[in-house]
Length: 453
Ligand code: PHE
Image (cartoon, rainbow, N blue to C red; front, side):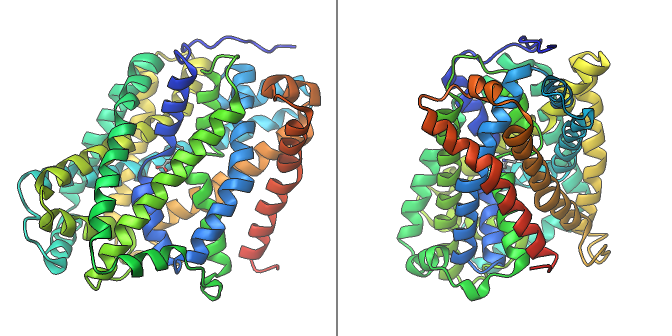
């Protein structure tokens, strides 16, 4: 067998470092920016319920599989799939799964960087006191004025992409690991403080109810697909990031425990974000379905009126930008690892190439908020189309294939050995989830979305 058990990129220094980095990859704009606005667009509680179900039944087992596949070969996603297919005596076309992941990562990064740029711009806005005493109308005007300007968006998008490239050039240890150590606790503390503020608002219970009270009549086939897509997106699944991070993980770490911790932390941050945003939405008579601008139209109202809001505002957008950065490095890493391992590029050259490609594509997202706002493809703006294509289609398809591969194609003794679960029963549960539950659930959601069931 050609399983090479060594990575050329170095390993995480400890289990804790891996958990931090993987949580850093999972926690990002998906939790704080995307989760609240798509929950708002899809009617609240019932959507959240489906999302949580997808995280638990589909996301967590697939996360275990994806980490395991990466750690077994210690290669980039394309080579991981090629080698594992060979090891299992399966079709070499499994490597296309790696390809799709590398592509999805760059596509997501292209718009991720634009939104992360908004957050970076808001650090400055908070610093210069733009939100001071601003009401909902003033805050909305600030946001609308900002996204109308392609030049401003391009500036912040470029800055963010450059930061991503700089960190990734430095490699696993110096770059990826150090940047998450301080961030996660910082983000958590800030969110708890903001929650205290949200709990003091008059709309708190209305917000809470919106988030947890399931009204299933609001669920459409498309919102179920979106909830599932969000489970993949928020856990960074189905596109090779987790595979690459797993390939830097030392063999003695329990993948299962780590996966639970990462998924729990990720879910907690998303729910906290919802608990903070919706009370502000209802207190100020805003609409939960205000789209991608939701957090930028709500949180500044809080910062403008609460004690210490100036400092909170700066810190919050700073932490959000850094949380986005620890996710964007995970988005670009599969492409970089592939270019380095497979094409023999230097890390510098690989980062530059991948970063520039994502940057250029990001311009489409920039324009979809202003000059191309009326330009629709299949009824969607460029940004919406890209988001739909990646989160709702490519990631679940990638996840489906990962589940099928680890449940049906990979030899039992290989997955048993690599997962190293404490009991035979625990292994049987995982095996059942990835062989049946996850693939069937993804399949049914797809059938439902295209109207077959
Ligand atoms: N999970 C990240 C977030 O929620 C986004 C992401 C997706 C990162 C896929 C890496 C891979 O913000």
